[in-house]
Length: 300
Image: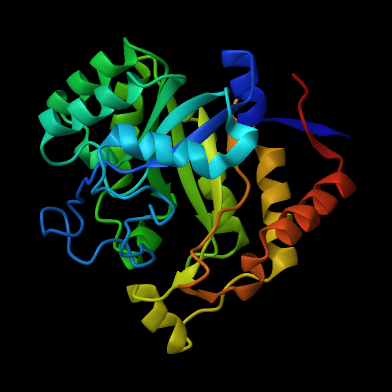
């Protein structure tokens, strides 16, 4: 039996009529899990950059960030369409008026056809929803939530600092805005076995429009690094991760858009797993496993 999935690339071609590139930008947002509002220290795996290590400098005006990000794509990105992507920290936390001005400026730039904002479900109150509603009326809006796991015990261990109920409420409210909802799930969190990870996929499949699957990276400067050095957990081996991704894709219905099959950790900070640093090899080996199980991306 074969299984097909819809990649983000195919989804964008269907929505926008062409290939679309995401430009990693920064709104200089903060996080309630760092300043004491929800918690301190952030999630144990989160880097100093707030998971936005590849984003443009927050010190630059957003128009300049966009131009710089376009240039980094080189010739392959010229004359195409782009999604303004704000991943670092919590994109609906802090001075919402300032954040709205930044997002509005971003979507006003040439060839920007969509906006993607990463945030936390406990930072989606009425004022934040009002901002998202106004932005969604300008152009397609994606909202990304970092769930990571549906296991409440694991969530406490990684210092996520919000309950599943907050995620469920946020997803229900976002559905009313007619935005594209994306959920992050991490494989390899300390203490989780295969069934725990796949249960998170099953849980998310009932509530989201898109999913990002992410391998746990241990990065310098994080609380997780100390746990790893003390031998409190091990990271996944390549074949373990590839088979988990294949299992997850088979569980997900085709209406769930697959935005990521793996992710990058900044090589300068990566402690483990070191095999993940070779992105080209990882993708080649992952695709080999998927083909062997007759799991293929859908066509346009």
